[in-house]
Length: 237
Image (cartoon, rainbow, N blue to C red; front, side, top):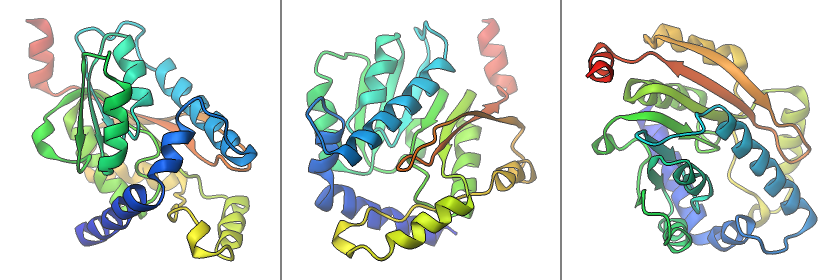
């Protein structure tokens, strides 16, 4: 399972560094984009808003991991609420964009690398917006187990729901030239996520919001994690 994660990570690193970094730079800016990319932009903005709404308005004193932070849009939103943010992305080029755009944000640290890197430590919240959607279900599950063990309060993440309409669109997408395709996305059945309990994750999984559109297929989901006894003791100190 680790081998499939590493292989997919390598392909994504190449894609976001060598193929699409300029496109993502523009997509996450205020520059005009094509009609299709505008739909993608609006879908991402809705997802960001749905995630932010599930967090306290005052995040001072909290530490948050933005796993797969891209150009840092969500990291800056969290910083504005007072959070200490660690933004990690597999693309060195996107991290450079994030750093340039966040020069006034003093509570964000950006790193190029693996979002599951253990040396970053534990967090109050871990957010993985669109950073798991390209991985196979088994790798998504293992990543969520890892995140839940390192989050004192909750993990917020997006997945691609497995529906007939989506599966049809994905099949049609294979007929486009390879140079015009985005990386493969992997739909996941909602029931599959509930198997997290079999992995020993003591959490209550709930769906936050569905962001639906022809080019936006992600469900926003929320995984509540219970604080460890150590975290509870610290909170009383």
